[in-house]
Image (cartoon, rainbow, N blue to C red; front, side, top):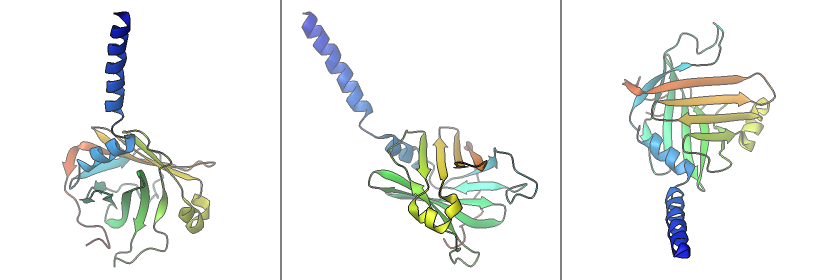
Length: 189
């Protein structure tokens, strides 16, 4: 009887574990983020910035403008500047983050398409993106960059740390208050 009870407990526990592991952390992250597709949110820089910083005193808005089975496009508006789009793609079961920078006429900036791929599936509420070789070739001083995004029911944060330096940037968006998007990012009309 003891063995039968032990088997029942193990079978139930194993069943719960396998159900919990049906979806990876990055798949859960992706699904949660995709629920906000079409919505725009206002944010604020949460790290110290100087008065002459390009983000100082500007309205910051992210817009999850386009979501598909393997991509999410998130323009990041800084005041009237619509040059930045975060491009997330799911490749080989891992999430890649790239920064698409454009000029007002839609042409690519000379510094664009930098970022990295998560080294593992991560957790449902955080994904890390160490700089890839393309980034190191394009921006040598950024080869030690690590970006990460945190996500929960109330907020989305985009973060950058340059390992080995004081460079740290973080902007947090309130997912509980939808705002109006300033329109398409440059080059994405």
